[in-house]
Image 1 (spheres, rainbow, N blue to C red):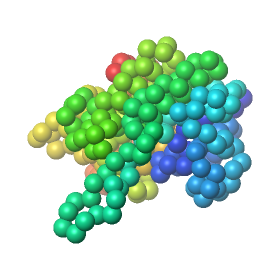
Image 2 (image 1 turned 90 degrees about the vertical axis):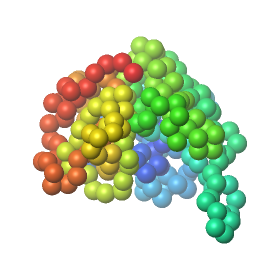
Image 3 (image 1 turned 120 degrees about the vertical axis):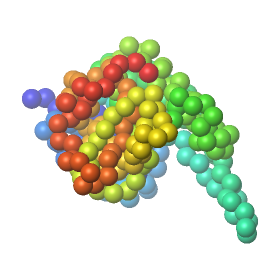
Image 4 (image 1 turned 120 degrees about the horizontal axis):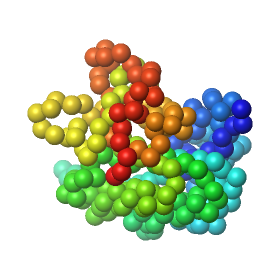
Amino acid sequence: MATKKVLVTGATGQTGSIVVQKLRECADEFEVVGFARSEAKAQEKLGSLDGVVIGDVTDRASIDSAIAGCDALVILSSSVLVMKGPPQPGQRPEFEFPQGGYPEDVDYNGHRNVIDAAAAAGVKHIVIVGSMGGTDENHYLNTLGNGKVLIWKRRTEQYLIDSGITYTIVRAGGLIDEPGGRREIIVGKDDSFFIPDRNMPHKLPRADVAEVVVQALLESNAQNKAFDVVTREEEEAPPTSDFAALFAQTTPGL
């Protein structure tokens, strides 16, 4: 069976590096190319520069070079908040986005670059990892750095759907740094996990997000689907093992 060549943007991020690792572990199925902005960080997070292309989602030429010959694309790049000066005693720290690194620049225009490059290269399937909360324009995440991050992410998701490329949109819940494979993964839609009085969990280990991404590249049930994803607490239910059944619960459209 031929391997599927996959480009992963944001490959040195906390979640992206786990996705790259998991894809590398499935060498019979995947050939992975990591896309990162920093050689030093790629060396640190991925162990070497083998299979890594240095570039930026805002630079179309670097994307075209990286995505050539790829069958699938995983978008894990994201705008990043930075602290606005040293915190003052007794005051909450303030955050901002660096110049050229606002959500509109990265999460929208940059990711449109990546989607357009994928279309031109003949990529067959795009998996994008976003965030829950996008149905609420007044969500507090939109206020941080005045970036309106969830609004721009949502627009990119619609752009992906409209591109005609097979898509999987994974909207992650509250990310935590814990081992994966120990919890039941549950999926929803339209921020239903935020509905009051439902007592629904919002935690999601990054390793479980990575597993969802890898399985989405393997399971046809994940194609042309968009969904929210969180996990139950450990010991509350058996860990998820049947991903075809999990993705069968998901639905098309934004």
